[in-house]
Length: 253
Image (cartoon, helix red, strand yellow):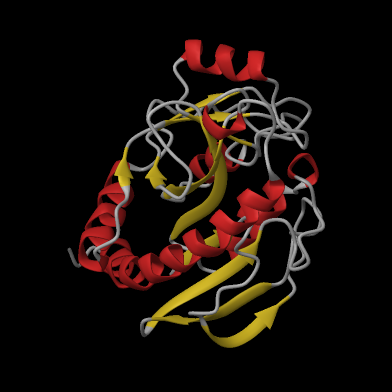
């Protein structure tokens, strides 16, 4: 079953025919929201609002471990995350991107299920943080939907919740990042630890600080306008991806 984690601009999924909601208790505390079960394009799916249904949880306070544990525990076989990002290089506001790599700049976030104690130390391979086969399935869905989804990008995960300085964006650019967001880690790594295939659709909502029309300041009003239009594309995209992910998860492809 496909699990969708919605970020800024996607606190609910209007294309999901809701069957039930479930509050899940986990060994790691409360998930961000109740899990919403239903169908997208006649395909079983579940949805979790990363920042809570009222968008009240900032990125550094998201309980990533509880979120991923709950999804796995309730039957998710693949996770598709939606997140808004700032564009650093080669991407512009309104574009949808399927990143292939991550650089982690976050700090002070519980970032592993393997925290020692009475558990064996485990080092998961994270060479390719996004599951290649699931990424390919997303690209196929985008082609069917007729929606442009850029293949590849390097996601710089920062702690937030403030936006970056122009100098910080320059540094991320030098490091090879093409976009910047606040929720990509440890979410991707935790999915890997749980052996959950994971991919992300990054919605570019603004140019990074000091770039393009964000040269002097970043307009929250412009971000809201971009989100409104871009999330309609995301919802259409998910309708085409969900049935393909079901085939991918069951090995029917």
